[in-house]
Amino acid sequence: MHFLYSICEWLEQTGVGVTVRDSTWLFPIIETIHILGIAVLVGSTSILDLRLMGLTYREQPVSKIAWRFLPWAWAGFLIQVVTGGLLLASEATKMITNVGFQIKMVLIVVAGLNALVFHLIAYQSVDKWENDPVAPFSARAAGLISILLWFGIVGFGRWIAYV
Image (cartoon, rainbow, N blue to C red):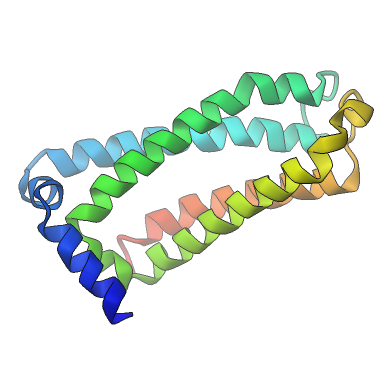
């Protein structure tokens, strides 16, 4: 843990960390963009997740929904990585010990693993079930897990300020 804390101390002292931390307006502007990015990411993934669970767009092929909304999810994720990195650089030593931040990071990793497993297993046979109003259990489970994880990530992201 000491090694990780040392990296956080270094990160805070970089030009980016100091600039974001010392600016009156930069941190809130970056945080606002971060929130807009999460809206794009969670909104677009939730549409696909709800389709996988058979709760919406049941008449639309799953691959069509994925093709339309996954680019938005990736754009939102990119915004999250960039703005999250900038915010982290400004107060890394505080974040590394923050339970809300720690849980949020774990949930992000789990969400990534869930997406990877979905694409490696369930989505490989999408051509067989994509027009079914209700996807197979593995796809429904992946959708439910995904939406719960992303809502949890948002929730714990908000908790960072309070724990």
